[in-house]
Image 1 (cartoon, rainbow, N blue to C red):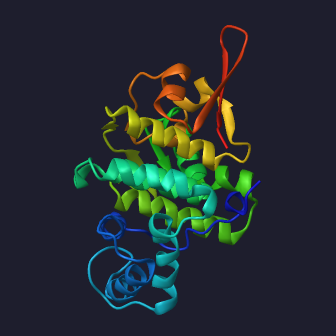
Image 2 (image 1 turned 180 degrees about the vertical axis):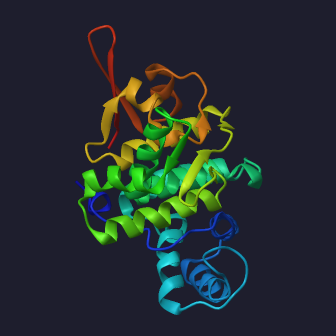
Length: 250
């Protein structure tokens, strides 16, 4: 298990526009030092809730750590990040949200696991509450205040990104209309992000394709064969006629 799977790391709300800005700089060929300097200045003027306002250095320093998923990922995620960059070069900027989702899910599996609990709840009911989400994530990470706080920031990020909508009472949410994912390489990237977020790096194809962590998206029809052929990063293992396991090809 990588240390990625143990850390929480979502210590503040992350705005999608911050992710967009970071990705634009990476695509422009800016160095890590140049990107960090730009973000240091830019984020010092940005509020967590969006818009311009003063904030403490400690807070926006935490944001830079998450944004670094694009420009300074862990070595084991470099190949994955590079594949995401290749897709970003040909996908319009307004369609970058699934790319950001994949990159953060791989770098911060806590994000992926909160999304999974949200998606599971939506499979059972039309709206969800913070309390329901927090109770489920505490079952996995333990009943600690830091777990609830990081989960709260993650959920607020989902709202900021437009994949959750506030509904009625405070702390109650409904699912926004799903985004259609038609590009198969993009769908394969999301699938790969799930494998990076899972400690074992392997899971059944059926579980992957129906993973509730992808609740914001409608994925195209995919099979184990099509996934393994779409990327050299996968290995497909068959047990019998129907049992297919997809794993990372390391």
